[in-house]
Image (cartoon, rainbow, N blue to C red):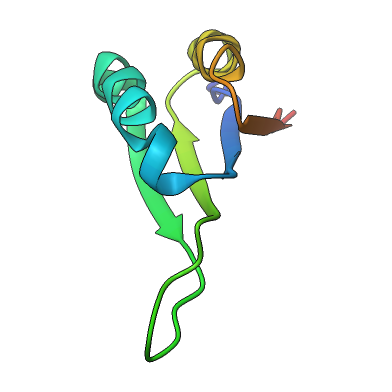
Length: 89
């Protein structure tokens, strides 16, 4: 008997002003901490400063939870999200 695999949900988050939005984003991510398997943050850095923008890549346990997190993050001004779901059918 074949075991059905869960969908694989990757949520990408574009933060337009990291310094301004990070407290609210961090609070939201903490609320969903039990369903975030992996979190990777990327931003441009040079020798004198770092970019105000950033990207987060989140590996979320269930598609339904990823959609809930996406909805919560989209309520924050300056946040844009995209969700990619691999169904493994």
